[in-house]
Image 1 (cartoon, rainbow, N blue to C red):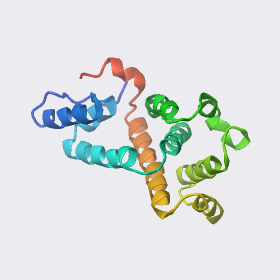
Image 2 (cartoon, rainbow, N blue to C red):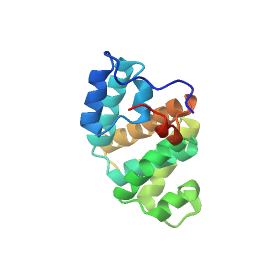
Image 3 (tube, rainbow, N blue to C red):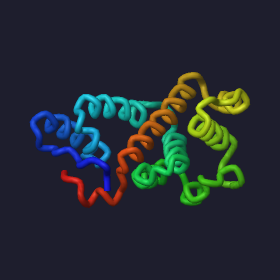
Length: 178
């Protein structure tokens, strides 16, 4: 159970933004139900995540592979639960999902994916990225895509840290108020 109660989506200061989230995303996920305790933060978060997920040119399979790897490294089960179906729709195989925790020894990842996963691991676990890892990523992506990849990794580290600090988990879906 989450450390805080979920926001009441019918409160006057929350309702317009909750309606916008429903219009854009189809529903108000429990992540946003928590964020809506601060409507301004929720609005900024929504705009930022929309840019990362829906307006970036980073290929969807790479984006979702990064999100899933960050979720694994940060032990963010809600993030993984939400993104596994999206990852599969974007072209990641079930075998790749199953082997993300041991990608270094798996034959399921190509050269580009390995470079991206090494970059994800370095950013998530060490913050600083060795030149060798950055140079490998740079072989496969132009400057715009490197920025988008880096922003995606950084953003989903933010998401997982928020989720885990407040103990937001998938089983909360049953108790969250729509």
